[in-house]
Length: 241
Ligand code: CA
Image 1 (tube, rainbow, N blue to C red):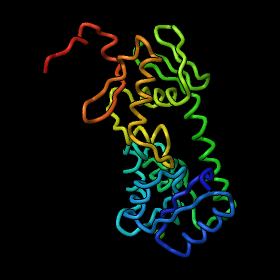
Image 2 (cartoon, rainbow, N blue to C red; image 1 turned 90 degrees about the horizontal axis):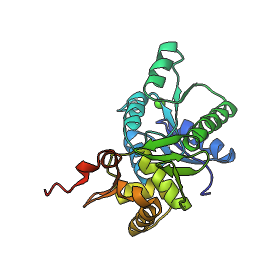
Image 3 (cartoon, helix red, strand yellow; image 1 turned 180 degrees about the vertical axis):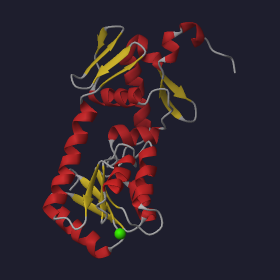
């Protein structure tokens, strides 16, 4: 079950939610159902899905407001959202996409169409996360070729260190807690001690050599990758505060 794509269905009508869940299960997905925004948030806090199916008309917070909210949160911003709605207007469609939805499906829809749309958003998201290249200071990571270089010298990293560095570089200058790094780098289904993060950060620094100092420990908070000190070595002196 673990390897099936997880789909969070946010739909307040139990009959529709159940119908979708049953069909998704048959279609090779691992569905979870939330009937309102509170349940949905609780579900997202526990396990991140691969896709969210989000009903527009929900009691309390609308699907549109939820989509906007999730897009702003670091933890949920890259999860594809497929909006379900009874509204077919062009302006509503635009509003949904503006709020951060990846696609839009109008009720009533066929299950075949729904499955096809889910597969399509999953496909569209996948290459984006593996084919990009990131640069921080003199450090360059190319995810497509799995190459890392610092000042044009190639570096060799283990697979976990590579993923860790990729995440830190994509979110440079920000502090990440150990639990966030576990979620983002190791994945939500894995239960590993937070100490593991420290071990891999240490290995990462060693593998980075001169660039190892770019990975900073932020006491009591976690880790941060910074390109700022490298560019202006004078400012790297301890401030004494
Ligand atoms: Ca509804």
